[in-house]
Length: 443
Ligand code: AMP
Image 1: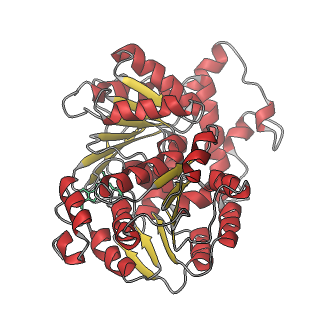
Image 2: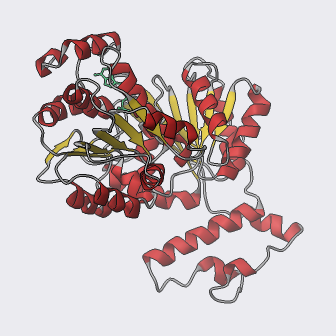
């Protein structure tokens, strides 16, 4: 199928699609739109960046057609506010010529405006599970007219512990309805929730499970420590023509803040922003919008904060830290190379993080090419504390794989068994010389 016209969507939708600049349906759109229009339950295995949002939004709008009554007829559940906002944006984009009413519900701010919007009547609700349930329990939502239920990024829903809330929601919606479930990866929990949620689903899979978008070039640098990671990042960013719109992913809020402050000092506050869960909702929205509009070059982010972030033309995704929830790797690099664009994903990996890289390579069923750190980049010595943390983590990883492993690190230090954290690193010369003893070598 080569064109959107083949779906026989109505004129209003066709016009909006053309205005959005979509000419060719993506693979997931080609595979999912027809069964959804036919009323089937669909399970879509599609990573972000494949066009999965439009794949369910377009047939949903086609089915809802026009505003009707006061109660919602479609509910779309999203794990995060950012993704919910992105879905709502797609709905707004495609319903330009329809009079459908959409309400967006998420937590982190007072419910007053959301309650007022619900009271005015709506056709579609896009919501995070917690806020939806809260407002339902307060009597602001009547679910009796719901006919269409979508669960987006089901794998993230499970990772974030939403399973209880999802079950609760399934109890309060009508049994007779059409269900769609989208997920980038297929874990045991996703399989389970799909079993509870979908009736004889049509399964559409656009690439092999958890295969990163083919438009993304992946690179790995083995970097001994944090300071060298910063040096390498700064070195690569010197090429500001090709590295023009960048997301830097960090594993924690603290690392994200540190990287942000470092980059802010180098490039000035007008080029860099940071988003993580401790930032207020408005700050996050402002930062994302500024980044989308091309007003800032670098966005530093943690995984949760960046979930659902829809920005096209991201030139590079940096994994400043290797994600420990390995499925996040697929989500992170899906931020670049979206739709029909190309992108680069660059991962920095310290000796303790190699463990996760191996797991990621198994998941994505491909090797990530390793590049040597460029000559110009100063390779710093690993500080004592960091060296110890890395060695301890490697010991723990080995122990996880082999319960009989005694732990080289901890024997060397003569620490009491099972009591790693208790021993304070010694100070002074001796400690810093030990810090150099990291076995990790650049390639
Ligand atoms: P998604 O996977 O839904 O997050 O979509 C990724 C990006 O691709 C979004 O910016 C969409 O607007 C864009 N997109 C989706 N489908 C198409 C299409 N058929 N043609 C061009 N761009 C698209």
